[in-house]
Image (cartoon, rainbow, N blue to C red; front, side):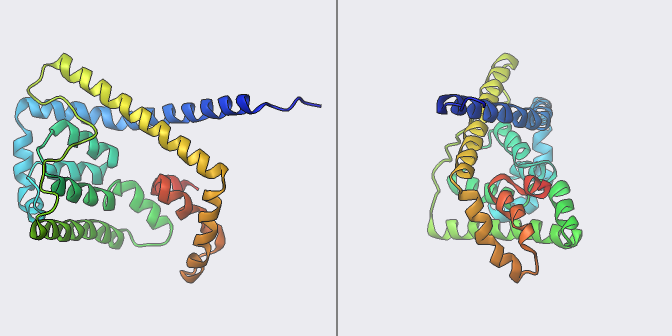
Amino acid sequence: MSKPVSWPNRLARGLAEVAGQSLRTSFDLFKVVVPIIIVIRLLGQLGWIEYLGAALTPAIELVGLPGQTGLVWATAMVTSLYGGAAVFVSLAAPLTAAQATVLTTMMLIAHGLPVELRIAQKAGTRFRVMALIRIGGAFLAGLILSRIYTAGGWLQGANKAVFSSAGRGDSWPGWLRSQGIFMLKVVIIIFALMLLLRILKAIGVMGLLTRLLAPGLRLLGMSRDAAPVPGIGMPRGITYGGGR
């Protein structure tokens, strides 16, 4: 008969598993983020960021954002939220709290479109319709929020970002050091989030969420077996939920 595993050993094993998952997730993330950071750095050194920003200015200014932030949203739509975040910190664009809220809201609604729209298509939706809903919905949400914040004079102070990056005029050693700190913060946050999800799963919150979603899915003509997809997709993302 095997000897029962003590709770300190179970805790240590669980933390080790979460740490391993966090490192693998971070590595997959950095495979996307690092090339983007380097490209943005080189574009900034060459002075091309201003030209790219100018091309996106007419559309992005409609939601009260400076032209260069269009590059942030465009990157998020093509790659992921993390790719957009990498461009955001690399550009170090001065924004108000309202502008940052508008930009990140648009990124949350429309990001990772090549992958996520394909997943949605597999679920039975039309690719072009969903693309229009995601992009158009993001732009409309940004427009509404911008008008509300401007009319009310809310969140007009300078935005204080959790992540910061070296400016384009800094030396390469200083820039590399700041990027290393940025990536370390990302790893720590991913570890914390995965640990929280592990705890929520252990105490039954994820199972409860799945059961709560089941009646709504039946109204949409979907079986109970589909409940884990949105149940996992909401806290961890459409891509992960689609994988379920």
